[in-house]
Length: 362
Image 1: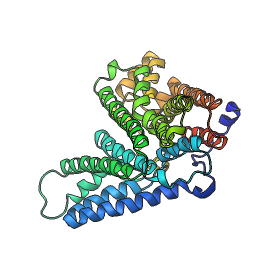
Image 2 (image 1 turned 45 degrees about the vertical axis):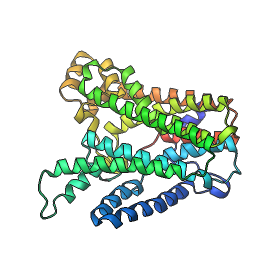
Image 3 (image 1 turned 30 degrees about the vertical axis):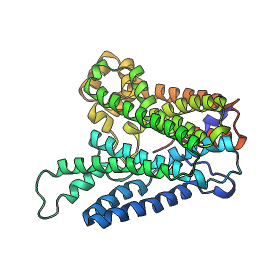
Image 4 (image 1 turned 180 degrees about the vertical axis):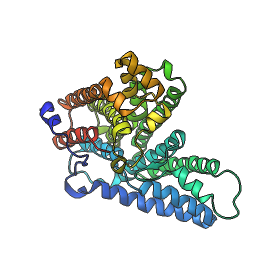
């Protein structure tokens, strides 16, 4: 069944819930819109410029995205509670993951000096452009970077505040917070390793790049959101579900990052919403680039060192090998769900979501 599932990769369509919450993404969007309106309004009452600052942060959240983290959290929760449980009580918690995600994107874009995200200027570019107003002095780039860092910090605080609005029992809230905190620590740790890799590329390897993928992306994209959702279900969750979600999430999350590595070099900017080649420009030691260096001929290795291009990387055979790694990880992830004690409709949704998220064009 797994091989059949992988034969025709679908578009990255989010599986649709059933029952009273058939438009999960719409419900998440509505939760975010209502919450952010209140937060921006509070800033506006202090100073109009703070209101403007808050609206930029708000627009970064609402400016698109696949909402994968709330979706994985939702299905992690549904797998335990079944199809009939109303979603209202957990909406603030799963929507908070999108605020955390936007925080990570804003800071990542500053570190990578990226120009666009989701087809629009990145936060630091937006703030730098605003610095051009008459009467402002100093360096626009520095102002843009500083303001973007603060916007990311604000988004992380907002994530905490929205999570706290979920009407959960004290015991459940403590367990959810523990999972949430672990997710954040792992994301920061992975990001630091990512930065470190750019500083010492000669000491990096495919294995080290995969370690970064596990912490920077797999953990907070798939693995921990699933466990976060499971924890929202309270005492109904079991160690068997936790183990299955952990294995599935680690495998599918790594595959997600490996696809991202390919899109970073070969993706269509009109579809991905960000320039192709940023990873090559910065020398980021992704699994793709590390594998290309490992497979390269002596002549190709010189070319990769001097000026890595998509053509040279393709000639090494690394993209094909990455595709094999993606397929194997998805198969391993789906196998972890085979005997998991979760509801069948959630297993089917996670199966679809695993394939769609790792065979996406953006």
